[in-house]
Length: 158
Image (cartoon, rainbow, N blue to C red; front, top):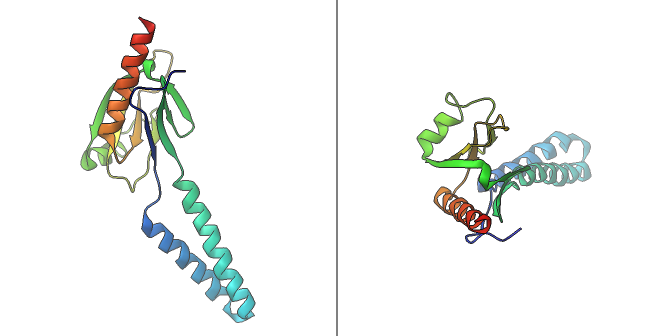
């Protein structure tokens, strides 16, 4: 697999406010355990904060990459040859495509806290997925990387 001419990698990290919420979850656990003494209170604070932070971290650890001739979005790996036109979605249009315009067969890598997205048509006739919906903070860079990978694949094939 050849590296793409314009490499792309993005981690869809959770917003900073989620880390504050993780701490507040720990405080609530500490308050629940307050009647049992100081040690359970500290254990609740540490354990509750850690559990909430692990949940926030795992939700925000998903990545979108263009590697060689493939788009890797979370667990999905799609060859760029099977992808068609990519449409950059502004916040209003992204909201529409993840709600009332959404197709239940679509692959959606969706993070509601990221306002912009990219919708990429799937052109493979054997694949029932009509399009990919990818939440991304940098849709222009992702489109450029996909086009670059597509061009490199065509150049290598021809």
